[in-house]
Length: 256
Image (cartoon, rainbow, N blue to C red; front, top):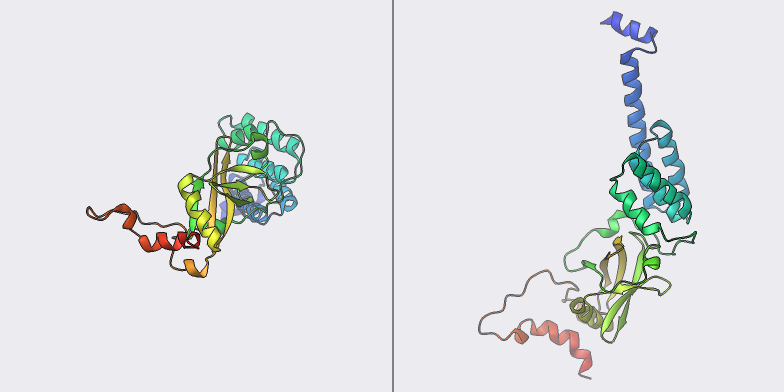
């Protein structure tokens, strides 16, 4: 055994040395990948670009790293480089879903300054019963605007008399909440509840937002923003009497 090790050390081309070397590079790249992901979650896009480029030096066909790099260039507004990287990924793997989706989203864009909504960390999407809701928007806005928005961007609720719109921080229309949820949130917002809204998923024909209750009005303290239970009506109880207390609390301000 000792002879094998000595011979391997004497010969740099030995399979034993080459195997260990490749394993070390793999471990190093995995550590760098984690650093690149953390940089991206913190919005440190220049740092993410530098780290991902370092990984590609040891593996120029790593499509995951290329996708992270394309995303970083998109975030700093260099859409030309972002698109070029997507095309490079597709040459390596023509069925790469991330690259194909991003290329579709970015194909009509010129250079631009990214919307000011801050990228959010994954912990912002942790669900809490009664306090959070993941929902798909209806009647989506302009496709060119949507292509500039990305998962993690913060948007806002904009209540109207008969609907609730979702808009960017600059007030540009993104989409609308379904009518049943909009009706509930209009009343809760009117009573004093506040919410934070983040883009969870964005595709050309599908935008999903994650809504989190930040503050509950005192008079609403026992009323969750997003009830989790399904109401099963008792056969002899009219539906309008079920949860009457909750309904009364939501509309009490209209009686004055």
